Length: 118
Length: 163
Image (cartoon, rainbow over all chains, first blue to last red; front, side):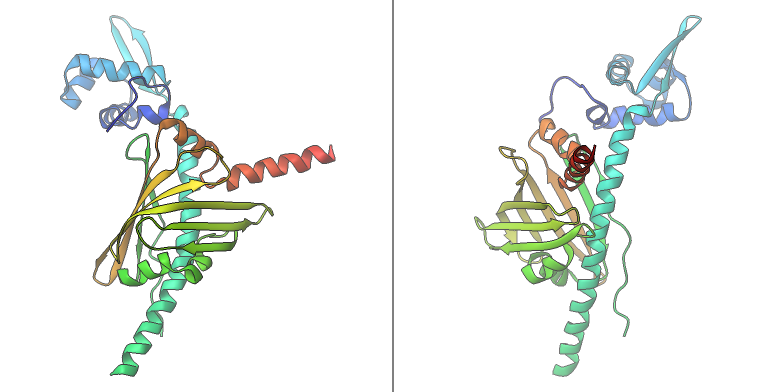
């Protein structure tokens, strides 16, 4: 799939499965990069690259502790996406609830037609 | 006789940054779901959801044929979509373009609807592919069906006129 070379927003950042994995791990708590490398089974340069993207869009924050850099999740940039998906889901659910009523009627009619033909 | 019950809510996921995937199960065989999905009189009964009344449901169900739906939303404004059928397999799948008429010059999305049946129940899978991230951003900003943003704009206008 064609994808833009640069990542500029949270939506795009979480479209990549490995970055979602990183967020999942960080959701459990702050981690140094070595832990992420071990848990994900990916090469460190790749993990660092994904962390860089996640930091750019504000989904991951970093702080120094001694010689370690600790990464942590910041879910805030995901909120607009979450809100939009929920809203979209709600409007389709309303449509589908009406479709259910139409289908129940079609089914009833079909069954009535079948029993008449028996 | 009690026939069918609601089968739960729609599930929306975002597989990539230009795709929106919706799935929903229905307590009916797929030929009936397909019928309700493609018959104008039936579309009029569900397409607007709780947002208003469907005023137009035109369906020319053949490859190269067009469709157009419009609704009078509860705020009084009209929301319309149209598109072209790219692929049709009766009772199985429909691929079509979808353009929101409130956004002139906007490229359309391509939507694939797949109807799959098991044990007399049908799973509808709707995959919407947006042409670019820019369009996706417009879609998200507009609340997808224009309705939300338009409703807000409308409110804003009313508020402004009374200020």
